[in-house]
Figure 1 (tube, rainbow, N blue to C red):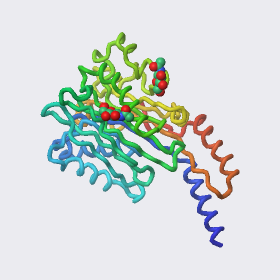
Figure 2 (tube, rainbow, N blue to C red; figure 1 turned 135 degrees about the vertical axis):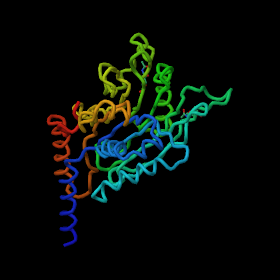
Figure 3 (cartoon, rainbow, N blue to C red; figure 1 turned 180 degrees about the horizontal axis):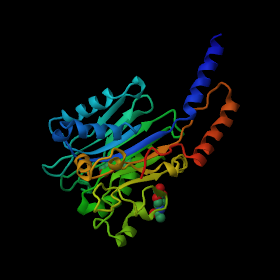
Figure 4 (cartoon, rainbow, N blue to C red; figure 1 turned 135 degrees about the horizontal axis):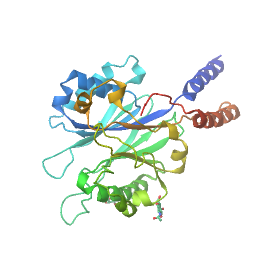
Length: 322
Ligand SMILES: *[C@@H]1O[C@H](CO)[C@@H](O)[C@H](O)[C@H]1NC(C)=O
Ligand SMILES: *[C@@H]1O[C@H](CO)[C@@H](O)[C@H](O)[C@H]1NC(C)=O
């Protein structure tokens, strides 16, 4: 009786997880602070953008009081009907060389992923210490998810200083090395507002950037993309870079999207720019399951089927229009 129940439950679990993908987003919410959180129409669009994601990296948080970001979280979770969709978050300290500071945050669905560890990259500013490569050192976060094909992955977030973009993007290679040595994890996602275009990274500089010249890194947003809201600009500032064969194989290329919230919500350019000057970028990791001691062989077959199906059909249709 108990065994029968267990079988039934695990079957249901399988059917449910079979359709699941994990959507990961990166969003520079330009100067996100008191004045944005106080405007319901802006907060609403930000909330809608984030609620499309299972993990969202949020950048350019300016919250000296420490009260603004929790308001976003309260708003976000109050919009969700189902308890299982609830978000948790982790936020960095305020980062910056001088008085100007920003924070990184990860917002994630607690039923789908867990935060295993965080590591604030120790790019100290004191002289004689390590080199000061970054204006806002990556807030490296290690996630686990038992429900996706990739159980362990690390996200290295970055918002470069525009005028130092070439040097900072190149230095992300060192951060990558440091991270894999520290945690021995293959699957690494480096993403954020790289400022990787339009004068900040001239074409001829790319070959000096190790993250680009080394073919073991896979860039999902190409140089021709436009991640800016402004109609008069066309720049691929926001990027997603993958490392790790299993991770790369678990990402459906068709899931990579720049989310044009201006068109999606019928906003004017001015209204959209009030939200941010960047569109979110996103991609999805396909589902998968832990092998279970029960009914090993059928699950194995099923798993194979799941991954190939996700490749051919693309699990995410018109959700993220260009
Ligand atoms: C990572 O970098 C920090 C400082 O840059 C250094 O102290 C640490 O030893 C590095 N770790 C690894 C594993 O390279
Ligand atoms: C590329 O990066 C990998 C780390 O994933 C490293 O092992 C390899 O030596 C690099 N290749 C070159 C040509 O630098």
